[in-house]
Length: 562
Ligand SMILES: Nc1ncnc2c1ncn2[C@@H]1O[C@H](COP(=O)(O)OP(=O)(O)O)[C@@H](O)[C@H]1O
Ligand SMILES: [Mg+2]
Image 1 (cartoon, protein in one colour):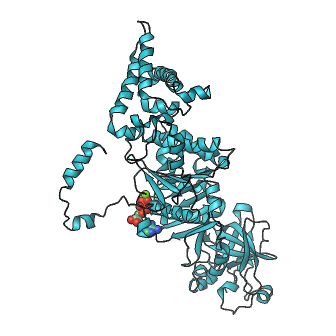
Image 2: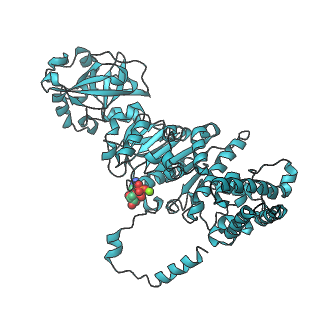
Image 3: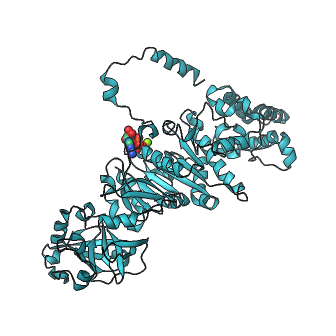
């Protein structure tokens, strides 16, 4: 071993204490220190690593030892009665030590005892109660150590891949912790996000066949993945009654004026909508209702009330606002694209039925509902997502007294629905999702946000996510955003985010024991989402018999999904 004169580190042989405890042959890298603790100062703690030792380790057959000392890898530090585990955050040359050592900042991630015979970590726990002294020796973490650390409780965990750099240690997600505090799945397009989401949800549903998962799927990708485990809803069978909308959502759909005019229209709509809802027998039974109460009403009643009210005005007052709203209602009723929501068939009181089918209560062996909103006209997609998300929230709030079960709401392309201030348009969906992010936990709602643009997410939403699963992010702005939201122990991994391969990710936070780099399992084709990217070479490479395809497309186009 090199003499690290700058730090009085290297006794040429392992200290007597170590020899007594760990009876390894002298060439055993696991039993020989690779460095020494220089300074313990919270997040500024530093170690010095012996370059000679690091290069000896590189050749080790154990992949974890071979990576010793690299940024993002873990090291063990000896304490009085066991081991501390720390992650290497950065590295730089030690100018004082003739190039024989490097200095590194470390983040402590947890501690454990020492298994007497083998020297391995045992009973590992996250968090540190006792810091080492400066001068404490630093050892490589071995694959066996990692195996102990990642050993998961099969009762509450699902495994989704393997721990890097080992090819065989299973990476586990603790489902209770993952869902207990929301999670975010981030990564640039093509890194394997959607497949990872399907993988995680499949594993969760296998573990929890009586679960309640609602997935908002803007691109219609997930139907393919959940043919067996899920129920698929799209504009053809969603049948979401318009009267479930609250007042704010009604305004988004029915009003297109702005400024002062909008306010006038909104006041009129509030009054007439309340009158229309009040005509329902339910309203009479309940007594006092509000404009937000989810009580069925007839669109034709609303139209008639608007007309009556306009008729009562004196000559000087314009009837234009009444006409505007009435015209919009007529438009929606007549347009086939809006039938999934504004059909005359949807007037019955189907609320309980609708909620039961969407939330999978009972689940009938299909705990996840995929709500494919790709066919929803774009001007109301965000309102539709708002209604669905709000139903989850309101259901949980009104269900506090019952023993209802927690619900997981997963939102793909989350940056569209909870956008940062710059892109915000005051939509109802952003408000309800932010509210779920902040308060959902208390009511047993878990949020899963999936996005390729974390920097476009509303401020604060990412920090509400207890677990962050980050795949490769190509853009600096996104990287910086994620860095800010990641816990301390994961900082060593941050630099690897732009360098991750497809299907690899960094997972940190509540759902994992320690921050970990994971290679996701290969998901069997029948469980994968339909990838949005066509293969040009395959599709253009050979002739296909698609006779009549253009005609069929035109027909569907004209019929608008009817
Ligand atoms: N875990 C996996 N198992 C099998 N195939 C995968 C996996 N992850 C990604 N892929 C493949 O990689 C491609 C891109 O994945 P996708 O999930 O659509 O990425 P993203 O949603 O990030 O754009 C798809 O063709 C998908 O089948
Ligand atoms: Mg995707």
